Length: 93
Image (cartoon, rainbow, N blue to C red):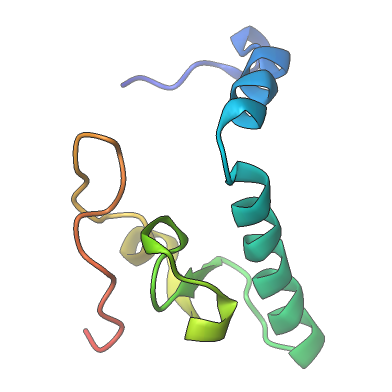
C-alpha cells in the first residue's frame, strides 16, 4: 500500500480509529515504558527499535524482555489476515 504524503493524512481520523481499538492505549504505553527504561540505563538506541522478546500483539509485555534490533529485523515478520505477526520473534537469529 503506498504511503500517503503527510499533508494529505487525516491525523484526527487516525487518532479516532486508534481510540476505538481495545488495548491500543495500553500497548502504546508499554512500548513507551520500554523505550524510556533503555534510555534511563543509558543505552544508545539511535537507528534501532526496541523489540519485545514476546510481541505485544501476542500477549507479551516488558517483563518478558526487551532488546534493541534494527528496524528492518523488527518489522519484517510475515503477518496473518488481521495484521498480527504469525510467529513470535526469535532473537537468537
